[in-house]
Image (tube, rainbow, N blue to C red; front, side, top):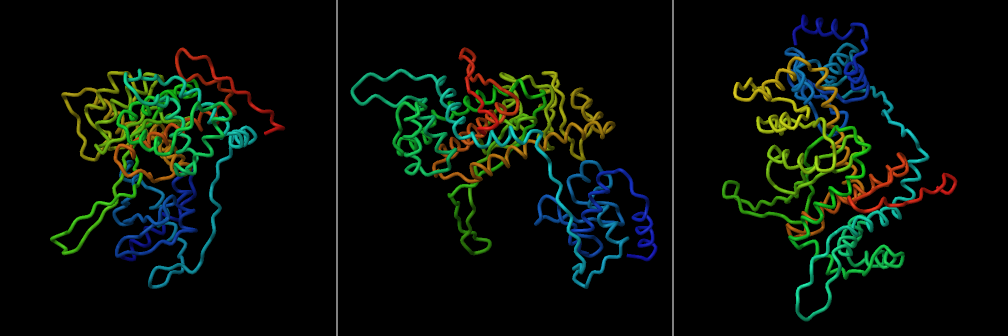
Length: 433
């Protein structure tokens, strides 16, 4: 880098500290991160993903992070490099810094720790009771005429499958927990572990679990503020695709994934609608939105660039739903689509207002982290239908946990089915909790 360029960078980085949050985060990165020189660019580690690096070009004022690609403005990684150069950090030939400053990680406090603690302490017993009330509304199909044993009730099969997913136990080891639930009156008949496996592998189970995902999220509509987010994620499996590569002359393998599309409430992180399919993200928005609007009042939807299509913008505009979906760099005004053109102009001319609403999309990532942390990021089933149903059961269990938290923190009286009375759950006293 020429000396004039270094002088310019030092002048820029020594300016007075502003109230810009990106500049403050850049200062923190410069203090704690291992910034390395890569040719004419600088490799800056991500604050959220330690193994990921973003390349900053100081001369062209560019960065490879999503924030710069969206705003085309100075990001925290560029600020970090400017501070790094201005402070004259002692680095060796490999770019290793000899001084390390530990920065305390920012934490977020709960509004009511006592209510939150009580919800976690009593979650298991409340989930059982809520799941029993949810399964009570599942219609039982008529029995086929002929000899044979009477089949298990659909509600008991759903209860057994969801509780197996909730406890994260194998089918055999979950039998004792199901027997205890039957003893407490939450389960009519304990299903054999092979019956649970067959139930999850049945294609007829998919619409039942899909409906239960939506019904379990319905009571939280009174807490949500009409702001929802949509995205997709993957769950790993134990199934591998293997093939022989003629080009490389070796046997290759790839782990298969189960792709989950969801719409999430940005206040409670509840999954309002879910779909398991290997198709792309963009075409799933109208269907997920329609199923969410059956139980929730949707006023705005946040999504990433994968959902930026003319059809999606026209669908949201027709339903009078505000769309906070960033556009790609090559997006242009479309004379045939007034909704697309109007949203594009709002995105380009009102960036600050757009980003304030678009930031709520991060709540869908929080919901994914909650599901995977509590119920696992992988599925144990081997058949594709069973894998999809197992992921949907994870969503049902997650929604019940969200309802339990709302019971303690917002005094929610949940009602899962339209004609059913509210589920009466007495909140224990704070002393008992």
